[in-house]
Length: 103
Image 1 (cartoon, one colour):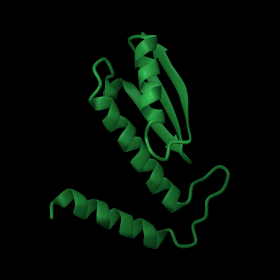
Image 2 (tube, helix red, strand yellow):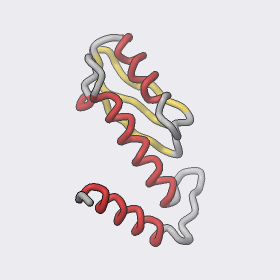
Image 3 (cartoon, rainbow, N blue to C red):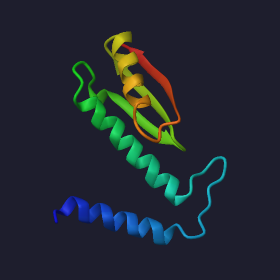
């Protein structure tokens, strides 16, 4: 077993134990939702890594209750459209807000 899966398993176990009794509200997430959103954010960023023209360091990705918000500066409208399409294709994403600006 490598360190990465072990660390992830430990974090998930801690989140599950500490999340008992932590319910979500309209403006805050429960522990399980937070973990889910963190995974979604990581998957979106990973999807950007393999795409020419998309610079993961220049696109900010935030997820709240399955809604992904993309912001930052990109080179073209086509790059923005591609980033939105990639984010929408990630499991667990309920919608995508495009706040990216063209350089």
